[in-house]
Amino acid sequence: MAINVRNLDYIRSLTSEQLPGIGARLHETLTDLLTAVGNLESQVNGNASGQPSAPPALNGIQVSGANGFLHVAVTDNNPVFRGIRYYVEHDDNPHFSSPQIVPLHDARNVTIPVGNQTRYVRAYSAYDSSGPSAPIYHGGASPIGVNGGGENSGPLFLPSQSSGTGRPGQGPQGPGTIPFRSATGAQPTRGE
Image (cartoon, rainbow, N blue to C red):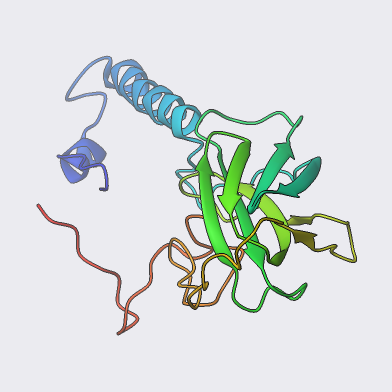
């Protein structure tokens, strides 16, 4: 929601002859507003002048499989803001054509039931209002699949529906690479 600042036209028309000291008082008011916006920006990793930057790429990913499960550990030693979110995606192919997205929120470990299937795994991070960082892949530039092991074939993974403002089958998205998604292209309205 935009900040509503009243009386801007009236303030613009004021002169120092009409109101002695208006310059210093107006400066204090604007400085208070700038401080408040700056505080809010740092608390939510926002950017009042544009889109917040995505976090830096993660430092590493480890994946192990046993008894029908994959265990994933994400390493992130970067300086980050509070509110960072982590995402793991897994797919049956190294091209991630229908990635299953697992939001970790602020955790960096997850156990995923996959049965006795081989899955490829990647991870990335994002802030609530930023695009995602560049993904990192288990195995590096040539992703390596990991088998979950176990006695059964595991779940049938349905087509990916993506996350955030991403479209079905699209990844990596996190909260989304675009600020909104709609069928008409018009920005959704917020409830009052």
